[in-house]
Length: 325
Image 1 (cartoon, rainbow, N blue to C red):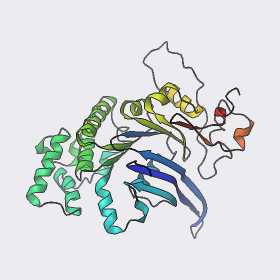
Image 2 (cartoon, one colour):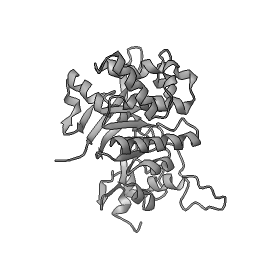
Image 3 (cartoon, rainbow, N blue to C red):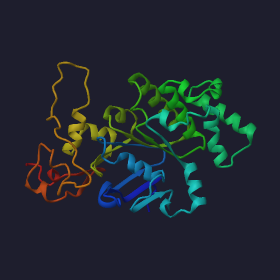
């Protein structure tokens, strides 16, 4: 039996594409297609990929904001897809989420104190006095003054609003926090502050993170392991240092080679990734990356590659069977 804090097994989630007067489903957008990942206690799993590859859909399934079509989500040995309403409420105390846009995720009509008090009210924790004390502790933890309580989200900068979002996620003392593009909407200088805050909180509270981003430089800074997602599927997974030092999948190689280097004389080692991500409504046969892969050969267009595992480094690519091609 797995000892992982979170284990996602063969998860699928699609969305119907409705057309016509009766809005009948004519096709399905398969956002998540047989995805399996694990997150250990106290670690950070980075999930990377281009926009539209299914990262956020996977995150919302884990947070129980979406109901998957099939598969399992095991948290501390329990399948959360079979929980009743009372059990789901308890699960939400253990798994919280930080969203990409703090302005959209915070109620602009509520003060900071009301926003941070709401989780305690929903879960019936404490009384008015203890809740006010906890709110001030949370603000101090994320580096905001107690005077912020009386202010509203629009009165803060983007970085300060994200600190409020982090404080809300911490309020119920979760074990896992899903960070869905938590720094991508922030300036670069503010990104580093928020990343360092997340690392400090992880050490202090023994948190686990599922950190979703499309910026591989950011993911490298914070992650213990990295999973690369393309068109609804995981194509590579390994420890952070290993995947940056020795990427096996051509897609991962292209993503890493695209990381900006502050050196005008730097020469890129690989080819520039060209073309658009195919539609998840009608994905290509075989390897889903073959329409853009610079190393494509005949088998790629009609046979889906299995996941190969070498010393805890997994990748789904036919080149691992045919390294001389």
